[in-house]
Length: 255
Length: 318
Image (cartoon, rainbow over all chains, first blue to last red; front, side):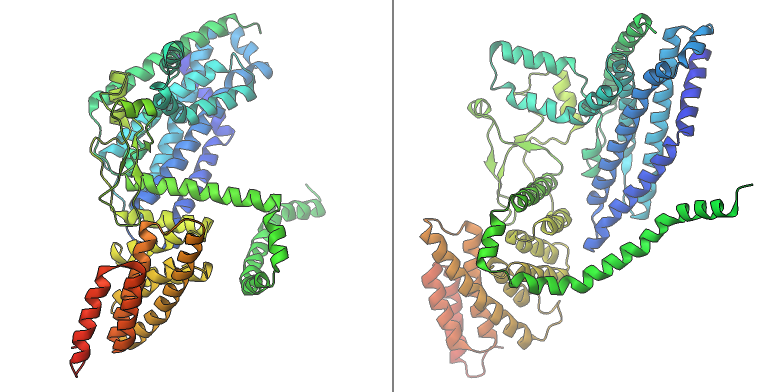
């Protein structure tokens, strides 16, 4: 575990050295400016509009940063040949994989927390109440980051860097549309095509289930804790499957 | 030690982006200065030039882009109207199973729309069991169809109008929400005036503007006579342009939709009421007659009786 945390620490440190967190802060500033656009309209009581702009941009950027960071970890280590001295030490490939995964997970969590701290400041400035649902949305967003990290780090062992980033971003950002399309057309399908649609629905990870932004924006009440627990289990199962697949692949990949 | 020239070069390359700021400022000022002149130039286009522009591929693409952008924003306004609940039209198979879309009945006229079914299926239709239940907990979902207060739609309407300033209906609805729900009649007046400026042919926006001047004259702090005079001018234009529009649509085997019909009828009514306030009873009665003939709007008859009563009273209205 100590070795895993050591590699994770180096991964987070590398992200800081690459100035990823600064990018986050600058983008966060852009969000504040973007949300400030509504001032042009000169209308009071537009909390939903501010929340909508801020949450949409925040979620989008958090996902992009997580995907980009996760996708470069192992391919960069292999391409720069920095993986060899690491593996020369008494460190297994599984440990390296877990270390990288935890590093990306911790970094992405920090990014989400930074963003949401900025959002909280924005909401306080504009006198917008956020409530318990805001914290629940934060928890689910962090949970989704760990799932995305597992998915993207694993995929980086199967695809090239560019393909991985493209496929991962498509899956992360368009999953809601994709799942809703299956739901809409399901009743029109019959026989094998219906079974196929259902199979696809069950196999892909449903990241849209971790997005409470709409409820935060439109001030819905908080969701039951049982749902949060179910989603934690859902994320753990999917992340576990991806990590197992990634470790298996990483052990077999020729360096 | 770096040579001085190199240091200067380095300093200049770092400060160079700052030079862009005054550049942007100058561009912004120039745009403001030349805005009015651009308007004049537009009116100098000949019919042939306009026809050529209509056939331009680039302009067609720009138009499509504009249409797509405002459609997306329009979809956003519907999402706000439904408290964030995502809706879609049901498929044929779903309709056969009793999963229907229905007309919205609890919204202001002009916002009438056909409400779809929630994206997260209901308990009977859902084949996903516990995952379906989880989905309904996570995304906004409603079993009973409800609409939100339309104040939240205002910024989206304004954004849509920035993307496409020719959406006459949005000026009318936006102004109605601004004045009625947000209690900002001055901003509503500005929006309607901008609508008339951007759409010189419009009868819808003129009808709303005339009525707005009549209804909100006190809040707008416009002297009564001045407000009614302005309303008469604008509503007169609204009636005139409405008649032309009606004829044009009838030639195309079409006609006004319900909301246009309501605005057209109200143009006559508020024109008659404004004339009544100005004690021009004969003209007001004539407008009532003409309006009733054109629209069959009952309130015009009521107004006509009211005018007859006032005309008999020597002192005029109280």
